Length: 386
Image 1: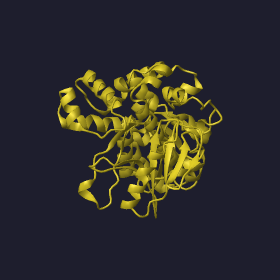
Image 2 (image 1 turned 120 degrees about the vertical axis):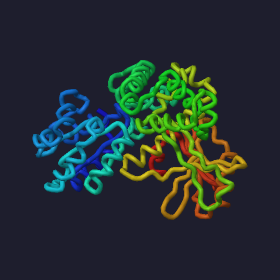
Image 3 (image 1 turned 180 degrees about the vertical axis):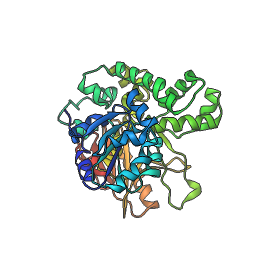
Image 4 (image 1 turned 60 degrees about the vertical axis):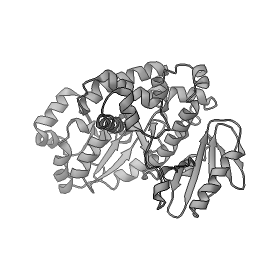
């Protein structure tokens, strides 16, 4: 079994907080992680109809039988439970007493923030990272990695990526989506998700999407919120600091898992991926998510943005640190192109606290230049950039 990087952080937080909340996409490994870390705790899945009915109809009685603590999986299925947990953990604030998991971040975070503020630590577990897979699987073939994606079952059960993601997406549409919202036209919604896959790394444009699909802009924004809530889509926010009108203030669209994005684009083989016009966008998506995973795996808030002004100058990632900014460019080419470093000089002219930039690229060597550095996409140092 592949050890998750977030393990030690979970252990430390469980020694300080009475409730630990682990959220993340379905099948990202939340249940496996909690059972491994807390093997002596009672495990209850609220996906189980009988357990869910007990929790919904008699939450006090349900929790009374769990006075010593428990793992409550998919807590969003019984949204009143955290309110009743509040009094229980106030009466007995023993650290690590309850472990909650959830696959719908907006519902989970809203419920938790209202009922368990100050009583729970929130951990986000995404699918495997390159850092976690290093030494466990072959990372030499970047196209194979992008095609497979990073969901644990693909690796543990040796599944064909196209079979796994077909089932994953169907389950999302048929189960999770119906729990979150009533969508009248599921076929149009599915087209919406596939169109978003074709716009990876691009600015979100609700008006354009509404015109393409024949629906209203509010509908598009509502659908995007649903995709965010269930960890399908991530919106990377723009970076701006008092230079207002010259900056783009619209988010960029990425998928939490690159394998799902490739599936939605109809890519089934490495040959198709190598020849696909969006291969560079998919490569960028993969590394953006690697940086996000690195932050989450350390239990840290996200500090990642992109920069783009109205004249077209753009930096793929801006890492905002306490006293400095780190610009990062992402290029799928295997050759280090020195022209990629020019944007770093332009960015530093705007923000004097800028560090020498880094280009994450498809090559295998790390090269340092006076204006910045080229770092291989699978380097052990990538996670340390953020």
